[in-house]
Length: 483
Ligand code: NAI
Ligand code: MG
Image 1 (cartoon, rainbow, N blue to C red):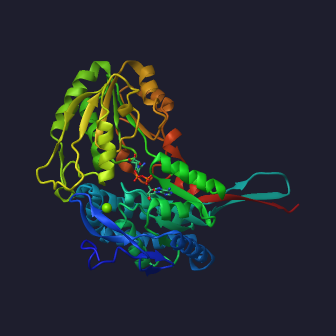
Image 2: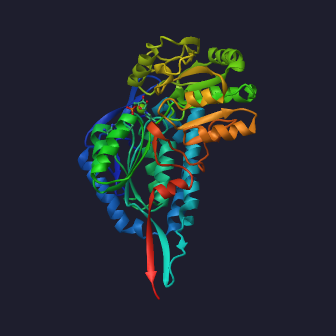
Image 3: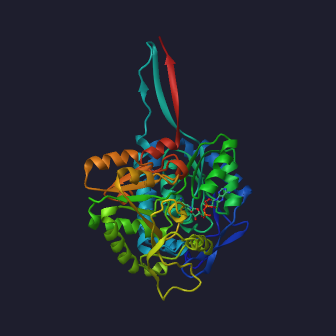
């Protein structure tokens, strides 16, 4: 058993039909802060995934499928309270497993509880419509669950992403098969323990850890799965959409981005500064909605560069439990990906760099955050998702150029506009290609109420808010002819 879950649960077990099973094989758990192996998780394969999908279907045909919407909601509300009670323990697990500074891990645990509260409260408030039609007809719509839903989760924000996808799917009455990322499974397993404790009927949630190529691929091609949600890389998103196509299974894909913050000359730079910085370095830049591009209008360019550079020189990267500005990256592989980009930084000016704390063990996956400037928006570091603590500043002149640069990567997840001019805010908000646009802020505190998702290479479908409940359901039209 792992030292960090000792006294709570054995992380090498997986959950099917309400039963915890021994692993058929295992994968190591690594602490990215130290590089040390701290336990093992199950390496489930096609057989376990197939059993999990069957168990989910049995739950739909039995106790889970028979609950009223209000009963489903109450179960999620009980789960929300259990998560709140164990929030500190969940945050510790996440900090060790992901290398996330403790304050950020605590925020994720609170968000998970809040998702269960929001979707628990929403479960019995989703309704169809009655539609005016021909004389002698009564027509109405029903919102029904898809059935078995598959959830393939990345390692960067396990709690938040489980909250927004599994929470909404359960509220709508689907039964879930969850495949967490092999790099970070612990909070998914803890969440499932708490769900069982909250009285979630057997099979409504099944958890099958394993690799993407084995468990993930088996889940995405299983014909019993009637909806797939995936957050991760665009490459794997493409594979999942292809696998789903064979079964005509709908997919929700959230594939990251290259999100800009656009600072106009009339912006309140004092107000903008904390957002410009934190949206780039949060979770060491391993955030789908990270703001990796800072566009600044010429009159503010020199001042913005100077202030951002000064802020960067004060940044510290340290072990997660030291709760510094940044923790390590998730893995040696992720560090290699980021360093690969940094080695291709020709055409960019390195403005400033933070530092790695002396306390950081050599075997951890640390990297100092870097701030660059370029006048070439087509530079590879200004185009591709690096998924590390790297921001690129780009100057512009006027709205037209700001829109062209902002919309010029193929991605479109989020964007923000910093300006005191109301008409410009409205014009820009309409023209930006993104699923979320923020005016004089970035992220709006991450509210669970706010629909979230991408356009273009950032994916399709919406999670969070009420909108997610529509995505996790099908609409049936009933037309009765009664004369
Ligand atoms: P990934 O896309 O490979 O992993 C995400 C999830 O997909 C994991 O649960 C993984 O097991 C699963 N998966 C992998 N291959 C699969 C397959 N063939 N079929 C089904 N499921 C599969 O991401 P990875 O390799 O961890 O990170 C690589 C890059 O992806 C990062 O550098 C970053 O650019 C991007 N990424 C974006 C995320 C986001 O939040 N948008 C999250 C994680 C990664
Ligand atoms: Mg780990």
